Amino acid sequence: MKKLFLPLLLLAVASLAQTAPNTATLTWTAVTADTDGSAISGAVTYNVYASAQGAAPTGAPLATGLAALSDAISTGLADGSTDCFNVTAVVAGQQSAYSNQACKSFPAGIPNAPTLTVK
Amino acid sequence: MRLSGVPHIFVVDYVQPNQLAAGQGYESIFALYPLIIAGQSYATGLVATHLNTIRSINPNIVLIGYLDPMQDSLPDSTGPGYDAMQYLEGIESAYLHDANGKRLLVPGAQEVCNGNVCNAVAYFNPASVDVQNAVVAAVKVILAAYPFDGMFFDNYDVQGAMLLDTTGAQYLGTAGQVYSAANAATMLTSITTLAGIIRAAFPTILIEANGDNAFPLFNGEMVELTNQISRVPGQAAVIPGRVTPFIPLFEDVPVSGPTDPIIAADMAYAQSFGTWYGAQATYEIPIWPTAFTVPAKMPRAPANLVAQ
Image (cartoon, rainbow over all chains, first blue to last red):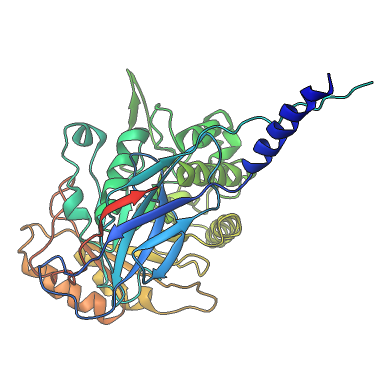
């Protein structure tokens, strides 16, 4: 009968593995031109915004001044939610319009294994 | 910060919900401006989409909501802000009265009709705790419902018709009528106190008032019409305790449309004092006057954003 405890232990370990924070890794392509088609000569940085699905962002950026073409968001991403993002480019203080919206869904969390007590 | 380094121009968004429903939101024109004063509406979804579309075109734009806190010009509709203010309609002490207990009415104001019932527009009493609470509650729900960065309070000043004359009747400026100076001083104190209550409740938002008085806890006041432009220098003067950013506004109504020469002349005059300039040639259709400079070019939006 004691063999039954091994699968339960493995289930508990698997459950612990689910507690790592959710992460959304964003990537986008570089902005190399202004809206009038002229090439950008200065440095380009990027801002990342959260947005409701299907809507434009309304709050402060999640990250600013990013030089890279990617960013990893790991805060505020709850199990069972769909989180969406937009990116803007900034050149010499002028900010672009928002990029397309990208979303990532996180599955609902797996409940912790019940505690089995043998008396 | 978003308003630093931008042209001192603004626009009032008079577009109506029926226009939004018909796809006539003129979002691309509004998005040219750095600052918009929007209208209040019960059409939450349409208006929110309209404002979000403008902001999606111009992420730097500053959007300011509207409330008329001193006058009961409320429609019967429910919606953000209206619910909080309509509560006052069951409280008689929320209104200003003459010595005989008759409500003080706004002279020349168009009656507000709900169905077949029309009511004259009456003044709310800024000293009423109910009014003070209702205004704060209304601002709170408006800010929650729309992507606003601040509020514009229409008719926020001591108007003559809010006062009593020396006999206790409503002061209407008729021949021989003299308003009570003590009453005027009390009213200014009340409306200034309300300004402080609003600012305390919303310490970080932009607040603009439309009227003849100056409230240092607000970010500025608006002067309207070219025949009032002589008030701009006084309005643009910084007064002790004025919060920043200080944004005095001047709103023109050029009758000849977007090429009216009055635009360039009035704009140059107003901006020479640091005042922001707005022009509205045709209500409900925004314009981008030819006298305005072309917005600075900006980088293209990033593309191919993917979330994994």
